[in-house]
Image (cartoon, rainbow, N blue to C red; front, top):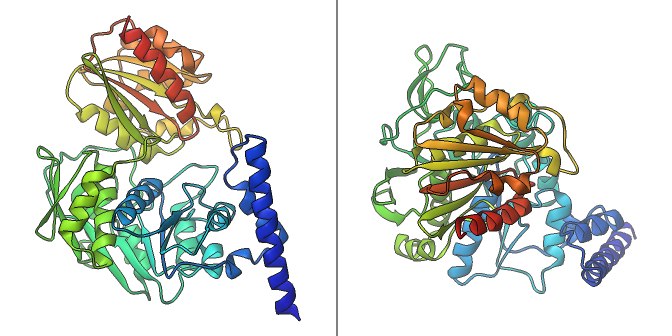
Length: 446
Protein backbone atom coordinates (compact mmCIF):
# COMPACT_ATOMS: atom_id res chain seq x y z
CA UNK A 1 0.00 0.00 0.00
CA UNK A 2 2.84 2.38 0.96
CA UNK A 3 4.68 1.65 -2.33
CA UNK A 4 1.47 2.30 -4.33
CA UNK A 5 0.97 5.64 -2.59
CA UNK A 6 4.57 6.64 -3.33
CA UNK A 7 4.14 5.76 -7.00
CA UNK A 8 0.93 7.79 -7.14
CA UNK A 9 2.82 10.70 -5.58
CA UNK A 10 5.55 10.26 -8.21
CA UNK A 11 3.02 10.42 -11.07
CA UNK A 12 1.44 13.50 -9.52
CA UNK A 13 4.92 15.06 -9.24
CA UNK A 14 5.57 14.48 -12.95
CA UNK A 15 2.26 16.12 -13.85
CA UNK A 16 2.84 19.06 -11.49
CA UNK A 17 6.39 19.57 -12.72
CA UNK A 18 5.39 19.51 -16.39
CA UNK A 19 2.45 21.82 -15.71
CA UNK A 20 4.73 24.34 -13.96
CA UNK A 21 7.10 24.19 -16.93
CA UNK A 22 4.20 24.97 -19.28
CA UNK A 23 3.04 27.88 -17.10
CA UNK A 24 6.57 29.33 -17.00
CA UNK A 25 6.69 29.25 -20.80
CA UNK A 26 3.31 30.98 -21.03
CA UNK A 27 4.53 33.68 -18.62
CA UNK A 28 7.88 33.91 -20.48
CA UNK A 29 9.76 33.28 -17.24
CA UNK A 30 13.10 31.49 -17.36
CA UNK A 31 13.52 29.54 -14.10
CA UNK A 32 14.99 26.22 -15.30
CA UNK A 33 15.13 24.49 -11.90
CA UNK A 34 11.58 25.42 -10.80
CA UNK A 35 9.73 22.42 -12.32
CA UNK A 36 12.16 20.18 -10.40
CA UNK A 37 11.44 22.14 -7.23
CA UNK A 38 7.69 21.54 -7.68
CA UNK A 39 8.19 17.83 -8.44
CA UNK A 40 10.25 17.34 -5.27
CA UNK A 41 7.68 19.22 -3.20
CA UNK A 42 4.96 16.84 -4.37
CA UNK A 43 7.15 13.72 -4.15
CA UNK A 44 10.37 13.99 -2.08
CA UNK A 45 11.43 10.57 -3.52
CA UNK A 46 11.06 11.79 -7.12
CA UNK A 47 14.72 11.13 -8.00
CA UNK A 48 14.44 7.58 -6.70
CA UNK A 49 11.53 6.64 -8.98
CA UNK A 50 12.27 8.62 -12.17
CA UNK A 51 13.47 6.41 -15.09
CA UNK A 52 17.23 6.74 -15.52
CA UNK A 53 19.63 6.07 -18.38
CA UNK A 54 21.83 2.97 -18.31
CA UNK A 55 24.94 5.15 -18.09
CA UNK A 56 25.20 7.90 -15.48
CA UNK A 57 28.31 10.08 -15.22
CA UNK A 58 28.56 12.51 -12.29
CA UNK A 59 30.93 15.48 -12.22
CA UNK A 60 31.78 17.31 -8.99
CA UNK A 61 34.61 19.42 -7.57
CA UNK A 62 35.35 23.08 -6.91
CA UNK A 63 36.16 24.36 -10.40
CA UNK A 64 35.52 23.13 -13.94
CA UNK A 65 32.27 21.20 -13.49
CA UNK A 66 30.14 23.11 -16.01
CA UNK A 67 32.90 23.27 -18.63
CA UNK A 68 33.59 19.54 -18.42
CA UNK A 69 29.87 18.69 -18.54
CA UNK A 70 29.38 20.88 -21.62
CA UNK A 71 32.37 19.46 -23.49
CA UNK A 72 31.50 15.88 -22.56
CA UNK A 73 27.85 16.29 -23.55
CA UNK A 74 28.81 17.71 -26.96
CA UNK A 75 31.32 14.91 -27.56
CA UNK A 76 28.91 12.12 -26.66
CA UNK A 77 26.19 13.65 -28.83
CA UNK A 78 28.66 13.82 -31.71
CA UNK A 79 29.30 10.13 -31.08
CA UNK A 80 25.59 9.47 -31.66
CA UNK A 81 24.22 9.22 -28.11
CA UNK A 82 21.10 10.83 -26.63
CA UNK A 83 22.45 12.80 -23.65
CA UNK A 84 20.78 14.77 -20.86
CA UNK A 85 22.52 17.26 -18.58
CA UNK A 86 21.34 19.61 -15.83
CA UNK A 87 23.19 22.60 -17.36
CA UNK A 88 24.77 24.05 -14.23
CA UNK A 89 21.71 23.76 -11.96
CA UNK A 90 23.65 21.35 -9.80
CA UNK A 91 21.47 20.59 -6.78
CA UNK A 92 18.50 18.20 -6.53
CA UNK A 93 15.96 20.64 -8.02
CA UNK A 94 18.05 21.14 -11.17
CA UNK A 95 18.59 17.41 -11.57
CA UNK A 96 14.88 16.70 -11.10
CA UNK A 97 14.07 19.36 -13.73
CA UNK A 98 16.50 17.67 -16.12
CA UNK A 99 14.71 14.32 -15.80
CA UNK A 100 11.32 16.00 -16.31
CA UNK A 101 12.45 17.16 -19.76
CA UNK A 102 13.09 13.59 -20.98
CA UNK A 103 10.68 12.60 -23.74
CA UNK A 104 12.18 9.14 -23.64
CA UNK A 105 14.88 7.65 -21.43
CA UNK A 106 18.23 9.00 -22.63
CA UNK A 107 21.34 6.92 -23.35
CA UNK A 108 23.49 8.91 -20.92
CA UNK A 109 22.91 11.33 -18.04
CA UNK A 110 25.75 13.74 -17.23
CA UNK A 111 25.08 15.16 -13.79
CA UNK A 112 26.85 18.27 -12.57
CA UNK A 113 26.67 17.94 -8.80
CA UNK A 114 27.39 20.52 -6.12
CA UNK A 115 30.07 19.18 -3.79
CA UNK A 116 28.15 19.77 -0.56
CA UNK A 117 24.94 18.10 -1.71
CA UNK A 118 26.57 15.14 -3.51
CA UNK A 119 25.99 12.73 -0.62
CA UNK A 120 22.25 13.44 -0.56
CA UNK A 121 21.91 13.03 -4.34
CA UNK A 122 23.88 9.76 -4.33
CA UNK A 123 21.28 8.27 -1.99
CA UNK A 124 18.81 8.43 -4.88
CA UNK A 125 21.08 8.23 -7.94
CA UNK A 126 24.01 5.80 -8.20
CA UNK A 127 26.40 7.05 -10.91
CA UNK A 128 28.49 4.55 -12.85
CA UNK A 129 31.35 7.06 -12.91
CA UNK A 130 32.18 9.99 -10.66
CA UNK A 131 34.79 12.52 -11.76
CA UNK A 132 36.08 14.99 -9.21
CA UNK A 133 37.84 17.87 -10.94
CA UNK A 134 39.74 19.36 -7.99
CA UNK A 135 39.13 20.65 -4.47
CA UNK A 136 40.13 24.18 -3.45
CA UNK A 137 39.03 26.74 -0.91
CA UNK A 138 35.92 28.40 -2.32
CA UNK A 139 33.47 31.11 -1.38
CA UNK A 140 33.32 31.67 2.40
CA UNK A 141 29.53 31.76 2.27
CA UNK A 142 29.04 28.41 0.54
CA UNK A 143 31.73 25.78 0.93
CA UNK A 144 33.40 26.47 4.27
CA UNK A 145 36.63 24.42 4.53
CA UNK A 146 38.08 21.85 2.14
CA UNK A 147 38.00 19.09 4.79
CA UNK A 148 34.28 19.67 5.23
CA UNK A 149 33.58 19.48 1.49
CA UNK A 150 35.86 16.44 1.07
CA UNK A 151 33.96 14.58 3.82
CA UNK A 152 30.61 15.44 2.21
CA UNK A 153 31.68 13.80 -1.06
CA UNK A 154 33.60 10.94 0.55
CA UNK A 155 30.76 9.83 2.81
CA UNK A 156 28.25 9.71 -0.03
CA UNK A 157 30.06 7.85 -2.84
CA UNK A 158 28.15 4.66 -3.74
CA UNK A 159 30.14 1.45 -3.36
CA UNK A 160 30.08 0.43 -7.04
CA UNK A 161 30.82 3.85 -8.52
CA UNK A 162 34.14 4.06 -10.37
CA UNK A 163 36.10 7.22 -9.65
CA UNK A 164 38.05 9.28 -12.18
CA UNK A 165 40.37 11.56 -10.22
CA UNK A 166 43.02 14.21 -10.74
CA UNK A 167 46.31 12.55 -9.73
CA UNK A 168 47.94 15.99 -9.50
CA UNK A 169 45.57 16.95 -6.66
CA UNK A 170 46.47 15.03 -3.49
CA UNK A 171 43.33 16.37 -1.77
CA UNK A 172 41.02 14.95 -4.44
CA UNK A 173 43.00 11.68 -4.41
CA UNK A 174 41.80 11.13 -0.84
CA UNK A 175 38.42 10.12 -2.31
CA UNK A 176 39.91 6.89 -3.67
CA UNK A 177 40.04 5.19 -0.28
CA UNK A 178 37.93 2.00 -0.47
CA UNK A 179 36.92 2.74 -4.07
CA UNK A 180 37.97 1.66 -7.56
CA UNK A 181 39.70 4.65 -9.17
CA UNK A 182 41.68 5.71 -12.24
CA UNK A 183 43.75 8.88 -12.46
CA UNK A 184 44.59 11.57 -14.99
CA UNK A 185 47.24 14.28 -14.82
CA UNK A 186 50.04 16.21 -16.51
CA UNK A 187 53.60 14.90 -16.60
CA UNK A 188 56.28 16.57 -14.49
CA UNK A 189 58.04 19.75 -15.63
CA UNK A 190 55.69 20.34 -18.54
CA UNK A 191 57.02 23.76 -19.57
CA UNK A 192 54.89 26.16 -17.53
CA UNK A 193 56.70 28.61 -15.29
CA UNK A 194 55.64 28.24 -11.66
CA UNK A 195 54.32 31.36 -9.94
CA UNK A 196 54.11 32.22 -6.26
CA UNK A 197 50.47 32.20 -5.12
CA UNK A 198 49.12 34.00 -2.08
CA UNK A 199 48.09 30.74 -0.42
CA UNK A 200 48.27 26.96 -0.76
CA UNK A 201 45.58 24.56 0.47
CA UNK A 202 48.03 21.67 0.93
CA UNK A 203 51.23 22.55 2.78
CA UNK A 204 51.55 19.65 5.21
CA UNK A 205 51.37 15.90 4.60
CA UNK A 206 47.90 14.50 5.37
CA UNK A 207 49.57 11.29 6.60
CA UNK A 208 52.36 12.44 8.94
CA UNK A 209 52.09 16.23 9.17
CA UNK A 210 55.51 16.99 7.68
CA UNK A 211 55.94 19.91 5.30
CA UNK A 212 55.53 18.73 1.71
CA UNK A 213 58.04 19.29 -1.08
CA UNK A 214 56.59 20.41 -4.42
CA UNK A 215 58.63 18.91 -7.26
CA UNK A 216 56.63 21.09 -9.60
CA UNK A 217 53.42 23.09 -9.24
CA UNK A 218 50.95 23.45 -12.08
CA UNK A 219 48.91 25.92 -10.04
CA UNK A 220 48.32 26.22 -6.31
CA UNK A 221 48.52 22.71 -4.77
CA UNK A 222 48.00 20.99 -8.12
CA UNK A 223 51.30 19.38 -9.07
CA UNK A 224 53.88 16.73 -8.19
CA UNK A 225 54.34 16.43 -4.45
CA UNK A 226 56.60 14.39 -2.19
CA UNK A 227 56.62 14.06 1.59
CA UNK A 228 60.27 13.89 2.75
CA UNK A 229 59.35 11.90 5.86
CA UNK A 230 56.76 9.24 4.91
CA UNK A 231 57.23 9.29 1.12
CA UNK A 232 53.63 10.19 0.25
CA UNK A 233 53.41 11.22 -3.37
CA UNK A 234 50.91 11.43 -6.21
CA UNK A 235 49.14 8.25 -7.35
CA UNK A 236 50.24 6.75 -10.67
CA UNK A 237 48.48 8.40 -13.59
CA UNK A 238 46.51 6.10 -15.89
CA UNK A 239 46.13 8.94 -18.40
CA UNK A 240 49.34 10.97 -18.65
CA UNK A 241 49.23 14.24 -20.60
CA UNK A 242 51.99 16.27 -22.21
CA UNK A 243 51.11 19.82 -23.32
CA UNK A 244 52.36 21.60 -26.43
CA UNK A 245 51.37 25.24 -25.82
CA UNK A 246 52.73 26.46 -29.15
CA UNK A 247 50.85 23.93 -31.31
CA UNK A 248 47.82 23.86 -28.98
CA UNK A 249 47.97 20.11 -28.64
CA UNK A 250 47.68 17.49 -25.90
CA UNK A 251 49.41 14.12 -26.06
CA UNK A 252 47.81 11.57 -23.74
CA UNK A 253 49.34 8.11 -23.48
CA UNK A 254 51.09 8.77 -26.79
CA UNK A 255 47.97 9.90 -28.69
CA UNK A 256 47.55 13.53 -29.88
CA UNK A 257 44.39 15.54 -29.15
CA UNK A 258 43.44 19.12 -30.14
CA UNK A 259 43.47 21.85 -27.50
CA UNK A 260 41.54 25.04 -28.25
CA UNK A 261 42.53 26.98 -25.12
CA UNK A 262 45.82 27.18 -23.21
CA UNK A 263 44.75 28.37 -19.75
CA UNK A 264 46.00 25.76 -17.29
CA UNK A 265 42.61 25.13 -15.66
CA UNK A 266 40.98 24.53 -19.05
CA UNK A 267 43.83 22.21 -20.05
CA UNK A 268 42.85 20.06 -17.06
CA UNK A 269 39.21 20.25 -18.15
CA UNK A 270 40.14 18.89 -21.58
CA UNK A 271 42.27 16.13 -20.05
CA UNK A 272 39.38 15.15 -17.78
CA UNK A 273 36.95 14.88 -20.72
CA UNK A 274 39.42 12.83 -22.80
CA UNK A 275 40.09 10.54 -19.83
CA UNK A 276 36.36 9.84 -19.37
CA UNK A 277 35.92 9.06 -23.08
CA UNK A 278 38.97 6.77 -23.13
CA UNK A 279 37.69 5.05 -19.99
CA UNK A 280 34.36 4.49 -21.76
CA UNK A 281 36.26 2.70 -24.53
CA UNK A 282 36.16 5.26 -27.34
CA UNK A 283 39.09 5.32 -29.75
CA UNK A 284 41.43 8.30 -29.71
CA UNK A 285 40.76 9.20 -33.36
CA UNK A 286 37.00 9.40 -32.68
CA UNK A 287 37.62 11.58 -29.63
CA UNK A 288 39.85 13.87 -31.74
CA UNK A 289 37.10 14.30 -34.30
CA UNK A 290 34.65 15.27 -31.57
CA UNK A 291 37.00 17.75 -29.91
CA UNK A 292 37.58 19.49 -33.24
CA UNK A 293 33.83 20.24 -33.38
CA UNK A 294 33.20 21.36 -29.79
CA UNK A 295 34.15 24.41 -27.76
CA UNK A 296 33.82 25.75 -24.23
CA UNK A 297 30.38 27.21 -23.52
CA UNK A 298 30.13 30.94 -24.28
CA UNK A 299 29.16 31.80 -20.71
CA UNK A 300 32.64 30.65 -19.65
CA UNK A 301 34.78 31.82 -22.58
CA UNK A 302 34.34 33.46 -25.95
CA UNK A 303 36.41 35.66 -28.22
CA UNK A 304 35.61 37.88 -31.18
CA UNK A 305 37.74 39.99 -33.51
CA UNK A 306 36.61 43.61 -33.77
CA UNK A 307 38.79 45.40 -36.31
CA UNK A 308 42.35 44.83 -35.13
CA UNK A 309 41.31 44.11 -31.54
CA UNK A 310 40.43 40.71 -30.08
CA UNK A 311 37.58 41.04 -27.57
CA UNK A 312 37.61 38.21 -25.00
CA UNK A 313 34.75 37.48 -22.60
CA UNK A 314 35.93 35.25 -19.74
CA UNK A 315 34.24 34.19 -16.51
CA UNK A 316 36.50 34.83 -13.52
CA UNK A 317 34.15 33.39 -10.85
CA UNK A 318 34.16 35.97 -8.09
CA UNK A 319 34.32 34.90 -4.43
CA UNK A 320 36.57 32.05 -5.65
CA UNK A 321 40.22 33.19 -5.42
CA UNK A 322 41.69 30.14 -7.20
CA UNK A 323 39.38 30.35 -10.21
CA UNK A 324 39.82 34.12 -10.47
CA UNK A 325 43.61 34.00 -10.08
CA UNK A 326 43.87 31.27 -12.71
CA UNK A 327 42.09 33.53 -15.19
CA UNK A 328 44.37 36.44 -14.26
CA UNK A 329 47.39 34.23 -14.94
CA UNK A 330 45.95 33.31 -18.33
CA UNK A 331 45.43 37.01 -19.11
CA UNK A 332 48.99 37.88 -18.07
CA UNK A 333 50.43 35.18 -20.35
CA UNK A 334 48.52 36.34 -23.41
CA UNK A 335 50.60 38.35 -25.89
CA UNK A 336 50.04 41.96 -26.96
CA UNK A 337 48.95 45.22 -25.38
CA UNK A 338 45.95 44.56 -23.17
CA UNK A 339 43.03 46.31 -21.49
CA UNK A 340 41.34 44.52 -18.58
CA UNK A 341 37.75 45.19 -17.55
CA UNK A 342 36.86 43.80 -14.12
CA UNK A 343 33.22 42.95 -13.36
CA UNK A 344 33.83 41.25 -10.01
CA UNK A 345 31.13 42.83 -7.90
CA UNK A 346 28.79 40.20 -6.44
CA UNK A 347 25.78 42.56 -6.19
CA UNK A 348 24.45 40.80 -9.31
CA UNK A 349 24.07 37.64 -7.19
CA UNK A 350 20.55 38.39 -5.99
CA UNK A 351 20.28 35.27 -3.82
CA UNK A 352 23.67 35.23 -2.08
CA UNK A 353 25.16 38.72 -2.40
CA UNK A 354 27.33 39.69 0.56
CA UNK A 355 29.63 42.54 1.50
CA UNK A 356 32.58 40.21 1.97
CA UNK A 357 35.61 41.41 0.00
CA UNK A 358 38.20 39.34 1.86
CA UNK A 359 38.53 37.08 -1.19
CA UNK A 360 40.20 39.99 -3.02
CA UNK A 361 43.15 39.47 -0.67
CA UNK A 362 43.46 35.76 -1.44
CA UNK A 363 43.41 36.51 -5.18
CA UNK A 364 46.65 37.07 -7.12
CA UNK A 365 45.92 40.55 -8.50
CA UNK A 366 49.69 41.03 -8.58
CA UNK A 367 49.53 39.17 -11.89
CA UNK A 368 48.00 42.31 -13.45
CA UNK A 369 51.11 44.30 -12.58
CA UNK A 370 52.51 43.74 -16.06
CA UNK A 371 53.99 46.12 -18.64
CA UNK A 372 51.70 44.77 -21.39
CA UNK A 373 48.58 45.60 -19.36
CA UNK A 374 48.20 49.33 -19.95
CA UNK A 375 44.60 49.87 -18.83
CA UNK A 376 42.46 48.37 -16.06
CA UNK A 377 38.82 49.47 -15.83
CA UNK A 378 36.98 48.49 -12.65
CA UNK A 379 33.19 48.59 -12.59
CA UNK A 380 30.53 48.13 -9.95
CA UNK A 381 29.48 49.46 -6.57
CA UNK A 382 32.55 47.99 -4.87
CA UNK A 383 35.04 49.36 -7.38
CA UNK A 384 36.85 51.33 -4.65
CA UNK A 385 37.41 48.16 -2.62
CA UNK A 386 39.01 46.55 -5.65
CA UNK A 387 40.93 49.77 -6.40
CA UNK A 388 42.61 49.56 -2.98
CA UNK A 389 43.53 45.91 -3.63
CA UNK A 390 45.05 46.78 -7.03
CA UNK A 391 47.15 49.53 -5.46
CA UNK A 392 48.39 47.07 -2.83
CA UNK A 393 49.32 44.74 -5.70
CA UNK A 394 51.69 47.44 -6.90
CA UNK A 395 49.69 48.49 -9.96
CA UNK A 396 50.20 52.04 -11.18
CA UNK A 397 47.11 54.08 -10.30
CA UNK A 398 47.47 56.00 -13.57
CA UNK A 399 46.27 52.98 -15.58
CA UNK A 400 43.23 52.29 -13.35
CA UNK A 401 39.79 53.77 -14.11
CA UNK A 402 36.76 53.43 -11.83
CA UNK A 403 33.17 53.27 -13.13
CA UNK A 404 30.22 52.94 -10.74
CA UNK A 405 27.91 51.35 -13.32
CA UNK A 406 29.47 48.24 -14.86
CA UNK A 407 27.46 48.74 -18.05
CA UNK A 408 29.16 52.10 -18.66
CA UNK A 409 32.71 50.75 -18.55
CA UNK A 410 33.07 51.09 -22.33
CA UNK A 411 33.00 54.88 -21.94
CA UNK A 412 36.26 54.67 -19.96
CA UNK A 413 38.19 53.34 -22.99
CA UNK A 414 40.69 56.18 -23.42
CA UNK A 415 42.75 54.26 -25.94
CA UNK A 416 41.30 51.99 -28.62
CA UNK A 417 44.61 50.64 -29.91
CA UNK A 418 44.67 47.49 -27.81
CA UNK A 419 45.57 44.10 -29.20
CA UNK A 420 43.21 42.46 -26.72
CA UNK A 421 40.43 43.61 -24.41
CA UNK A 422 39.37 41.21 -21.66
CA UNK A 423 35.97 41.36 -19.96
CA UNK A 424 36.38 39.38 -16.75
CA UNK A 425 32.92 38.79 -15.32
CA UNK A 426 31.48 36.98 -12.34
CA UNK A 427 29.28 33.87 -12.47
CA UNK A 428 26.12 35.94 -12.06
CA UNK A 429 27.07 38.88 -14.31
CA UNK A 430 27.28 37.06 -17.65
CA UNK A 431 24.21 38.83 -19.07
CA UNK A 432 25.66 42.21 -18.08
CA UNK A 433 28.98 41.28 -19.70
CA UNK A 434 27.19 40.68 -23.01
CA UNK A 435 25.62 44.15 -22.85
CA UNK A 436 29.03 45.63 -22.08
CA UNK A 437 30.58 43.67 -24.93
CA UNK A 438 28.19 45.23 -27.44
CA UNK A 439 28.95 48.72 -26.10
CA UNK A 440 32.70 48.08 -26.43
CA UNK A 441 32.19 46.98 -30.03
CA UNK A 442 30.39 50.23 -30.78
CA UNK A 443 33.24 52.22 -29.19
CA UNK A 444 35.85 50.32 -31.23
CA UNK A 445 33.91 50.85 -34.45
CA UNK A 446 33.57 54.63 -34.03
